[in-house]
Length: 316
Figure 1 (cartoon, rainbow, N blue to C red):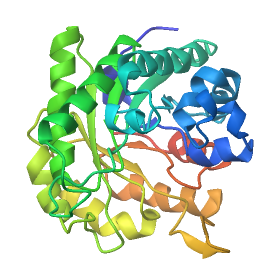
Figure 2 (spheres, one colour):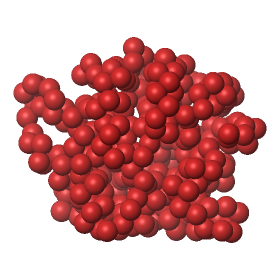
Figure 3 (cartoon, rainbow, N blue to C red):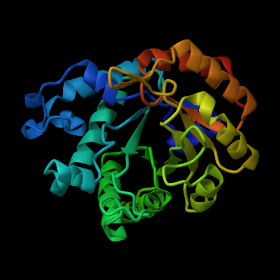
Figure 4 (cartoon, one colour):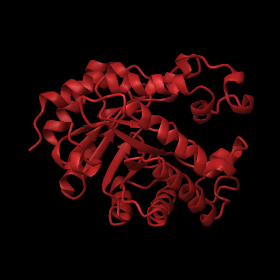
């Protein structure tokens, strides 16, 4: 197997990311004592206390045909880790999570597999005037992401994925933090900037896709992406506009449809066949799309269906 970088692979073919992590963890019904210090709900911490569980989830996605797996670090910026009392170990925990994902990738010799460092939101909205969610310094947010990015890079992640972003100012801070970490570690790494849009094509605080793209596309990101919040159908108007720019490669990671309320729980009912049909159409119509995958409600069966879609397509 000839080794290639993530950037090289991106030039040569359409890449497939994995699916949801959180819902797969819940299928295993972890008990409070399974989490570090009995911190029930601290999913990222399971990589330390139940590493085989996380490795099993990674492995199933790779077996389904994913080229890339995201680290179990969606909530591992310093601000989120502080909520569980682990903020002072931000670099260490992110590094170990990346190394764990890498160890699973190394089990496969059929083709190159890549580790994507997942960087989810802090839970704050720095652009807002909310008495709680808006009252945090920009430096604190930037540092929270910089420490996370440093750990992921030290753990040999192939790319950093800023994802499920609700506030464009926070996205900007995360990008700046990632560049700082890249400079500090001296390692070049692909940088992906994602935003999350509602069914009307706007972020939580009202930023539309045009404004979001204009704001961050020249900040040194390599890929611009959309993930979460909606299924693929609701994303299409935004994808069409982004494709028309003919500028950045695009990453599209929808949920398995719009969430439906069943007994007070969000349920995603889009089948692998339906999501594959939608994504097949996208790949045919929008050549700027270079990466696809699944977000909330998707599982290895969805990724297996997307693998078939990619294999049936030829990238120009």
